[in-house]
Image (cartoon, rainbow over all chains, first blue to last red; front, top):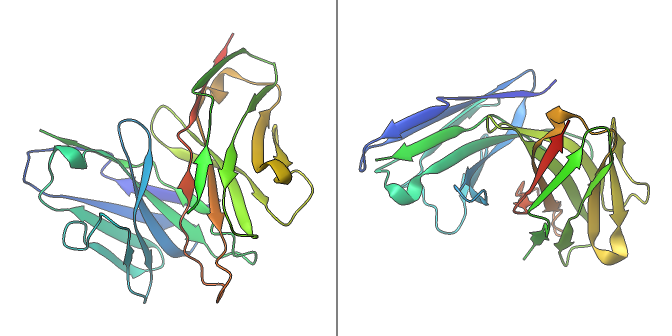
Length: 118
Length: 120
């Protein structure tokens, strides 16, 4: 089945430092990867949608300068949170999209990378 | 803009019973996909079941099934024979299919989740 691994699972960083997280699709080719942040209140925000060989599309309030993403192949993506501050804390989730005939956009998620900022 | 609303904050049930979780959505698009995911205590988000808007039949997947009422923009999740392990936070999500080029935005809009507690 489709598996998505994310690491690290948890990071505690000092305010103003950066955190890099990785997302690995195992057993399938992820045509695109969506990075989400889940707040402590459990709400989801889409940060960006990344498709291999295409420009990464960032949502409003999220920028490449703050959340640079690398997506070199169909099984791997990484994202960095630069200069993390308290408002950046949360669970960062990587959702990998499987190519399917119905073009449903169904995502398979990893376990997330939890960021705590001190 | 799309919106997904889960009005139930939490539900408690006894194991082996049936539970229904509500979800209503808003979209102007005629073609869309509806998903239910659950988030376990570890944070993992697990895909459960999907309903395609053009399908009239309610989707079923193991002990999960959906109550799709398109005129009401409602997609309830039904879990039969609940187990302790079903305790989790359940999220309803929607994705629309853009009408122009069929380009896939891939964006899922999530509800705020419903906490399910299954008691022995």
